[in-house]
Image (cartoon, rainbow, N blue to C red; front, top):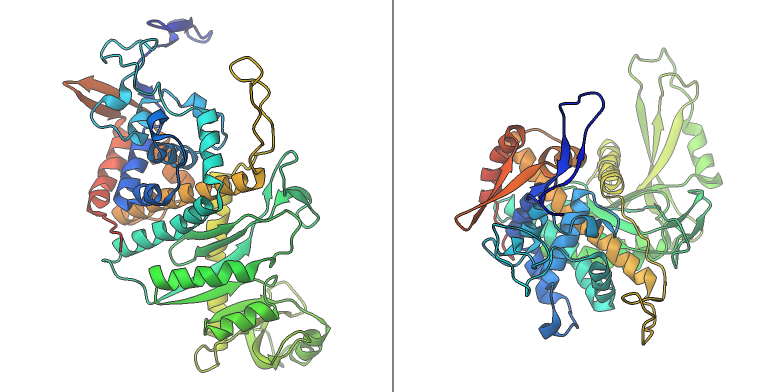
Length: 488
């Protein structure tokens, strides 16, 4: 690029000049904040100790830890597409944030990249990992062992954060919210199928979160046309065991109307796990509800009322009767009463109907977290089997079989969820510092996707921020420095 690249002059003001210079400018200063958060959590070291890296250690340019940081920072910052990695390769703040090297070594370059202040070193990486390198990382992570480790990292990240922000104590009770999500894809990704309910070609993964904390603790990619509850038993029961071992003492389960069936309900009852779920209306339930759907005698109150009716119900496929609660609602502009059913294994003495409804309505908080994950992280699952046709401009001497694209897409989904959890940790620390709630998108826009300049002086690097951003970082930094998540 030389000293400068192009000179552009806008027509509205001829005194303005626009040019590009080989200076260490960045629009991604927040990557350093994310790196500090990851260091405090210790989650990358935890992953690096458990993941299997089959590469020859003498031929490695980018260690696994650096590649994992690159992916988490890239996704948390909002760079969702694989080729964004090439765009960020020489971003100074990103290079510092993901590197294992200390001092100003992360900014050292190879001879063909001009930088008058830094010594050239042909043995160091020329910027961040490229898109092909990150694609090979996804392939390495797609083994069954490595995917299991990635799944466990979601819960590990959550457990470390919750304990660190609660004086190293585990909460007594927490609630698992289980749901399914549609992730729309464009193309013929293996396992993606047209889903008539969503009117799109999708994957249909299972997702689990803790509503009280906002963290995602479990994900499992599934084919696009499967039923909402497909594979729920194998997903929920092991997750409950891990949650009660690492995160809290007693975990309850909250699910929507697509999940309750005999195998799941019986399994939860066998392990004495409290649950609450909505159940779909059917002809039998409609007959049971009919006598309760008449308005009380007298004038309607100004505020809509809620009526509860305790009953027991046994579906044909169920092994026994279970407690159900009919919830009847008045709506301000509706002539007829609205109703729905809740099912639970809490007794009426343990949880009264009004408390049960309040607990179920807190599911909306979890759905908000799911929505943030889909809206802010926007997981891009685009891996499809494409055999390599060229290598360095020529046909490859050997052709290797394509990796399992479904498993690679699950890796990408899990990395997106890990990026969400790290970003959410930053959000929680910022809220602790300011005493105000905020959204993930606002955290990204005001704290992370911000401009900066890296200056080198006396073998030290200084990140210069705008005054507004520096003020926000100054409020967050003492809380971040006091935050220390142990291994537990």
